[in-house]
Length: 226
Image (cartoon, rainbow, N blue to C red; front, side, top):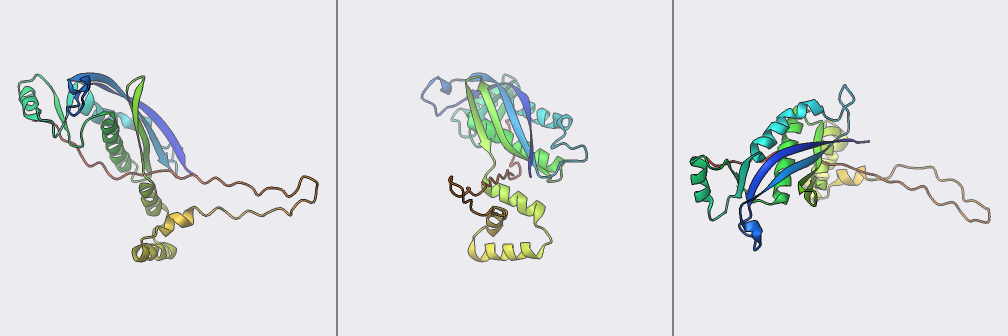
């Protein structure tokens, strides 16, 4: 069983320039950004919470430092040096996005920053499963944890110091097959009722729906202009 909770955080008003665009997005323009974070865990804390919402103030500070009244540009923007000069003159508060700009990259930045912080705060008990960031009410982008990241978390939290886990690790090394995921997705055994002899025919077997959740790599870091 897994648990989830969500939190909406306002990031602030931010300016961007998408220099690769053919449209007016190549000009400096701004949005009031809002992000929704989805957190996951397998075990609640001693208060029966996934995460402490009151403990997300540090995350809000990190996000506002990056996006509130700042100017985000791509590291490969041809005018980057000019923008650095404007930063030095106090005209803009520059942030350099090394993976590029755009709402998808903004969501990615928020995902990595939040997952890094939550992993540290909860000692690996929780992770960020999904982040959605809105430019405005009509446009948003979503970043979701990958299945590979899910299995890494599951193995770390639930299969340590176990002879079976040692065997699984050896199989993965030799074959490249992620046996841990295969084993986790085997449906539980269910006693099947005897076939019915009534006129409606045999009863169908019960359905089983297994759902897993996610975990991401730690925050890689993003620098801003100086």
